[in-house]
Amino acid sequence: MISIVIPIHNEEPAILPLYDRLCAVMERIDKPYEILFVDDASTDRSFELLANLVETDKSLKVIRLRRNFGQTAALSAGFDEAQGNIIISLDGDLQHDPEDIPALLAKIEEGYDIASGWRKNRLDNAITRKIPSRVANWLMAKASGLELRDFGTTFKAYRAEILKDVNLYGELHRFIPALASFYGARVAEVPIRNSPRLSGGSHYGLGRTMRVLFDILTIKFLLTYFTRPMHFFGKIGLLGTGLGGAILTYLFIFKLMGNEIMVHHGPLMMAGGFLLLAGLMMFSTGLLGEVLMRTYFESQGRRIYAVREIRCRKEPQLKDGAR
Image (cartoon, rainbow, N blue to C red; front, side):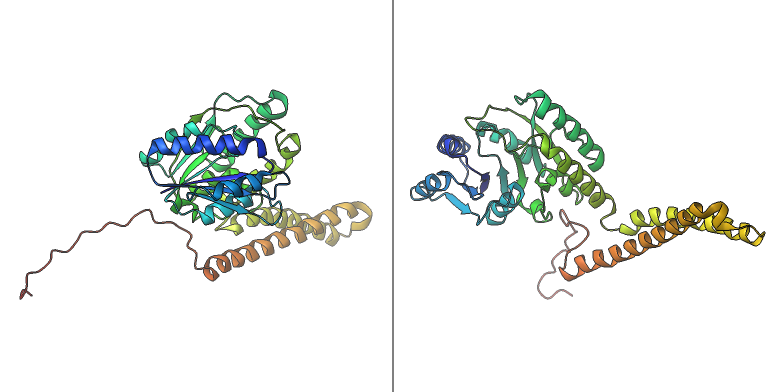
């Protein structure tokens, strides 16, 4: 089965056209499918339209969230409810063309775990969307080590088992390929069309830039130091402790020579003490991180690896009476 997950928020004009086009595409694919709309507390008639459609289509499911939790939470709710072994996510504003779904599925059938859409010819404003997006995508690729040209699009296809290894928080939905690659997922990029919005404006703009930068830093830490936080905090702690210790040692020798420290080097002594304390705090943070990491994996029974498959040589079966 193929599950299609669509988070929506106030997309009333696009719902019926999107539903009709999705059904037409999936009928041509001729495989079992389900469509899951996740209503992130819309204030227009989006849910009413979807509730009417559910009455006539058994392949349609509508999930309504209690309040506006954001796109990441809406996607997570859809992924949790999806029954298919392949899950496709796309936006509900018709900027993603449902007719591109077969191209994503073709990559999955080639053996990839994730087929990620690439808006090769974007129609967005160059100043507010295209240039910031290009910079952000470059930073994301460098931070994650995954060479994708478009992290931001929701239009992707996943093998369902891959999503089981990824927990989504904050606004990390755009980093699912990077997070999944941590567990060895194979990712391919597929060019997709970028259509203009039917109505309304985008929910994103320049104000999202700082949040994206924070997310990039978070992903860099998770992918590089998640299972070894002491390697990150320890480096900073060693630097601070080393510099602070060297300064205080110098001042101690200076004091033994009969000089007055506070008169000549008061600020330097304060800096040395601060660096020493900051370094010890970084070491302590690293140790606490190691404890928390072990608690996280052991309390939930999670593993720090994911097995793709297990093969072994089968022992020949003995005939009856043979020893």
